[in-house]
Image 1: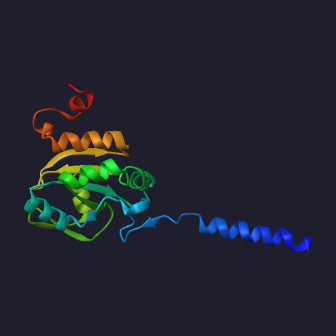
Image 2: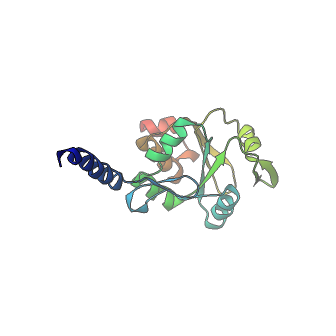
Image 3: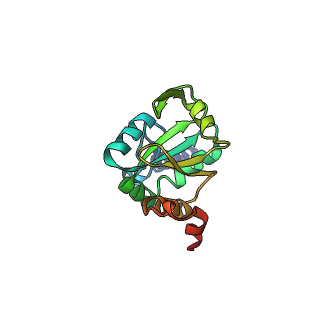
Length: 175
């Protein structure tokens, strides 16, 4: 009987570990989903621009690549934060652009690949976050990983209209 006790205990521990591991859910675009299903809603660029124009909302574009470590960290930490999700849902439409994709999008009447669009906006690293108005005018472009507090500051800077009268660094510093 003792001979079977260790393998049986090991099997029970493994089974309970697997059952409790809390498999991380993702949606069909790889967007991390926190418990309860809260997440940032990402739509295609063309659809985002059309929705922004119709609803008079700002556009957030997350420029990423499949191999970018910090893009994944930002997806898991920043874009699943409840405050970020709420702020984006209130005033913004969110789109993702794969900086290496040849998939076609339309920007200001021209059809270009996502990679050419990335080059055209002079995105030099990933992730890069771009904020646009509903007509497609770039309002703010920030390269690199952005943590939740700084992301919330950027959302406030754009949604409050402060971008029209002051530089982001001044807004962030409270000037």
